[in-house]
Length: 105
Image (spheres, rainbow, N blue to C red):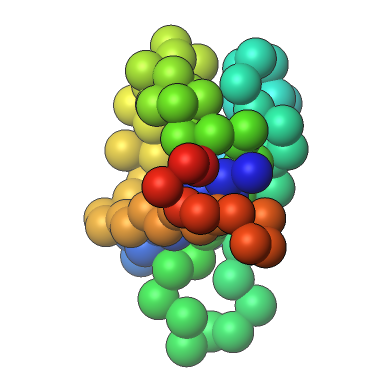
């Protein structure tokens, strides 16, 4: 199982209501993608955390993650929602099954 995390620094003018909308939109839109097993999104708790918004998604494999990255719903979410509020972002990918060689993820 592959765990994908997308962290976003948001523009200063993005208020908490907009972040809440991002959370709702990400969950409803991204769960429609066939390759997605689980979607979690959230807002920062610690004000010192520079990443105010995150999306975390589980996939069966890196191949499924690659398919997801090209899915029109993910592309739409990025362009219509994230790009309008994000000033910077980073993505992290982890293997979540103990003992599995990441070469076969």
